[in-house]
Structures are given as C-alpha cells and as structure tokens.
Amino acid sequence: MALSRDELKAAILEKATNAPKPQLYVKDFYACDPEAKPREVKNAANDLVKEGKMTFWSSGSTTMYAAKGRAKDEENR
Amino acid sequence: MPKHDTPLLDELEKGPWPSFVTDLKRQAEKKPECWDILGQLELSFKDKITHWKHGGIVGVFGYGGGIVGRYSDVPERFPGVAHFHTVRLNQPSSKFYSSAKLRDICDLWEKYGSGMTNMHGSTGDLVLLGTTTPNLEPLFYDLTHNLNQDLGGSGSNLRTPECCLGRARCEWGCYDTQDLCHTLTMHYQDEIHRPAFPYKFKFKFSGCPNDCVAAIARSDFAVIGTWRDDIRIDQAAVKGYVKGEFAPNGGAHSGKDWGKFDIKKEVLDLCPTECMWMEGDTLKIDNSECTRCMHCINVMPRALRPGVKQGATICVGAKAPILDGAQFATMTIPFVEVKKNEDGEFAEVVEVIEKIWDWWMEVGKNRERVGETIMRVGLPTFLKVMEVTPVPQHVKEPRSNPYVFWQEDEVEGGFERDVKEFRKRNAQ
Ligand code: HEM
Ligand code: HEM
Ligand code: SF4
Ligand code: SF4
Image: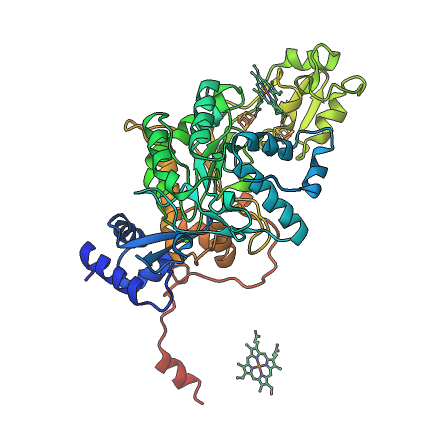
C-alpha cells in the first residue's frame, strides 16, 4: 500500500532530519515510499518547504533539500 | 566604499570596443558597491581563482528558483559584495518588450540592487546582478505587483523557456513559437518555480531549421519547425536571381564583391544531399532527399519557401560539457503538428514532455542531464520509452555490435524453457 500524502511527508521529514548528510537530493527521498511516483515525492518535499519545515539549498544549477536549520547557511555563519 | 586600484582590469578599457570595466566604473559613481566588484575581480585576476562562493538558501517565499545565492569569500575586504545574489527574470517570448518596460526594470534594480544587469542570460532571462538577502522580498513584491513580471528558473527546475522571433517577424516560422513558448511557460509554472527534477531541464523553440535560438545545442527539449511536403518554388523568382535582379542571401555578405550570382556554385553544389538540379532554367528538387537544411531557402528567400504541411521535429538531450563532452540534442520525434486543442493546450507536445519527465525522474541519476541518461541506456531503450518506432533518421552509423538482442515477445514460445527436460538430454 502506498503511503498517504501526510505519511509520505512525515517519512521525508524524518529522513531529512536524521540522515547523516544534512542536504539531500530529491531522489534520496524516493525510498521513503517505493510505490510513489517521483513526482508525488517531489510535491510532498516541496510542500514541506512551503510549510517551513524544510529548506531548499541551491548552487544555482542543482537544488537540494534539508530539514530546517541543517543546510549550509551563509547567512548565519 | 573606497575605490580600488585595478591595473589589470584597466587594460580591458584600452581597446576600441565597449568595456564592462568602464560601465562598472560609471555605475560605481551611483552605486559604490560596484567598486568592490572591480576590486574583487582584480584580486581574482591576480590570484587566478574566483572569489565567489556558490550557492545558498536564498529565495523568495513560495519559490525554489529564480534567485541564485552568491557570496564573496573575501567579504572583509569587499563588504559591498559580501552578498551579491543574482536575480533571473522570465523574459517575454522572443524578448519583445517596450523600452518603457526596460526603464521600469532598470529603475527597480537601481532601487533594490547594484543596477548592473546582464541582458540576456543564456536561457534568455533578464539577469539582474547583485543584491542582498533582505532586499529580495521587497524586490519580488514590486516586480510582481507593479511590473507584472515574474522570476525565471534556476537549480533543478524547469528553466525559463525561450523561443525565436518566429511568425511575429519571420516568414519561415513553421509554427507559432511564441504561442507554444508562452503556453508551456504558463502550463508549467510549478516546475519553473520549484525544483522538480534530478537536474536542470531546458525547453527551446525555433520556428525553422535555421534554429535561431540554437535549441539543438542548448536545450534538453528542442522543438524545431519543419515541413513534410515540398519546398515551394517560384520559378520566375529563380530566374530573377539567376539574372541578378535580386541580391542573394537577402543582401547579406554584400560588403565584398563576390562576382555574379552562380546558382550552381552557390546553391546546387552546396545542397548537402545533392538533391537539386536545373532542367534548362527550371529548378528541380527531389524533396524526398531534402534534409531541410535551409541553405537554398536562405540564399534565395524570394524564390523558395518551406512547404505548407508545417509542424516540428523534437530533439532531446543537448548539454554543455560539464561531466562528459558537450552534445547536440538527438532527433527523437520526427514530426509533430504543433496545434492547440479546444482547451488551449498543445496536448501532443505536452504528452511527449511528460513521457520524458516520468522516465527521467525515475531513471536519471542525481545531476544527470536527460541527454546523459539517454547515452547511458542507449537510444534504442529511450525510443522504446518514448513509444517511437525507429526510422532510418534515428540511425547515426552502421552497427558495430554483431549481436542481435531479441525481445521475449519477438521469439516464438518466449524465453521460458523446460530446464529438466534440457538436462535429461545434456547430462553432466
Ligand atoms: C529603432 C531602433 C532599432 C531597432 C528597431 C533595432 C532592431 C534590431 C533587430 C530587429 C535586430 C535583430 C535581432 C535579432 O535578429 O535577434 C537588431 C540587432 C542588433 N541591434 Fe538593433 N535596433 C535598433 C537600434 C539599435 C541601436 C541604436 C544599436 C546600437 C547602438 C543596435 C545594435 C544592435 C546590435 C549590436 C544587434 C545584433 C546584431 C547581430 O548580432 O547580428 N540596434 N536590432
Ligand atoms: C567459467 C569458465 C569459462 C567460461 C565462462 C567461458 C566462456 C566462454 C565463452 C562465452 C566463449 C565464447 C563462446 C562463443 O561466443 O562462441 C568461450 C569460448 C572459448 N572458450 Fe571458454 N569459458 C570458460 C572456460 C574455458 C576453458 C577452461 C577453456 C580451455 C581450457 C576455454 C576455451 C575456450 C575456447 C577455445 C573458446 C573459443 C571457441 C571458439 O570460438 O571456437 N574456455 N568461452
Ligand atoms: S529559427 Fe527560423 S523561424 Fe525562427 S527566427 Fe530563425 S529563421 Fe525565423
Ligand atoms: S533545404 Fe538543404 S537539403 Fe533541402 S534542397 Fe535546399 S539545400 Fe538541399
């Protein structure tokens, strides 16, 4: 059974919070629900950013995700 | 902010051409942080390394693209560029805007940024160079509320789509590039403003094979206008060119005397597929051999035009040399009609796009452009994904692999076999 959107979001946030690497690619979240389409996983991760629980980190050419406060942040150095 | 000595950069003011160094010095009178751009660049010239740091969390609320975080790695020496973020604005289709709009954008940028711009970025965006994090939200508010202008794409997003002038100014447009570009921009707002993919993805639209936006070299998804029927010929105008009544190439290359126009030397002999000839003073074309290179049409625009059954070829997977070498996009869909349906959508093109995305999001590796994914799995696999039956134009070279790999459904009885029965006859 595929996870509901809320369950998927919880699994993504859990992974973003506890993964050894602070910043993750969207693909790293696919495993949170192997039955979900990549686009559903992406939308769930983007929702978490909208809600302020995760942040985007971008080099300009690639974008990664991090739980709030975990990304390399130039502003607060 | 004090002026810095910039002997190396000053060299760049010496030629007869316009110089960004001169521009920056002029702008620094109004925006002193521009002295620090010059200072830091001078230091980079000396150190032979960039002093910009890549990346960051900067953005505006609700968006995950359009602003690229840039920070100095020597902020103590150049505080004016400690933060120096780049803002990308989605340009109007074909970059058609009024000078009033340009003035408004420049005024806005004087207010919130350094005043320095880059018109246009490689993806066509209006690029605004240099602002600080606290200025981003007010800038975005004014931009969207007063200028009716939006941010473009960056990061792992769909990048700002770009198109040629097309039918707005050019008689060779085989479909309405502006309409397709604008409609898909609106259709894919979510993908443009928020990351969606393993890496960047670019759309570019050219109305004919002249490919004025270099879609085939610069985009993951290149839609290039073409025609299925015959080149239209006005034989009277052909005679006119031969007699020297009309300047070839629309009068281009006229700075030098090239002698009398020679249709054999300048057109027939340069046709790459050798499919043109003269019968008396009548021009003949074997259209089944024509590769739509546009050469003859470019030389004699008054006499020759694309055919009337118009549409586009879709090529997939161009990229610049970051990981592997640079590559052109590969011809994937030989012909689509580029038509809007009753819902105002280009449904056929959208279907192709989404087939590519669904596959690439799943199979593509992190930071792998779709062209690299195709290279990795091979074109035959990609064509299967796209549900395209291969045609000779998909074949690049004679085979170098002697094996034939059958699919199970191509073999009678499939791949199932009775192993026990086999072992009985071939006992160890
Ligand atoms: C009413 C004034 C003008 C009009 C209507 C105009 C129109 C155009 C058009 C239609 C193009 C071709 C664009 C394209 O094919 O992509 C062009 C190119 C160009 N224009 Fe203008 N232009 C004007 C004034 C100027 C001025 C004042 C300058 C410089 C002082 C200028 C410099 C250029 C340059 C450098 C190009 C590119 C040429 C090339 O790369 O081949 N233009 N202009
Ligand atoms: C696990 C061990 C081995 C494997 C997996 C193996 C595999 C193969 C394969 C796949 C071929 C090509 C067959 C074809 O396409 O026609 C081949 C050919 C050949 N093998 Fe082996 N082989 C093994 C051990 C050996 C040993 C121990 C010998 C000799 C003592 C040997 C001698 C040959 C010869 C002479 C050919 C060429 C036959 C021909 O082309 O006429 N192989 N082997
Ligand atoms: S690509 Fe073709 S249609 Fe578009 S502007 Fe260039 S010549 Fe005209
Ligand atoms: S478009 Fe190119 S290939 Fe076709 S007839 Fe003209 S020159 Fe030959």
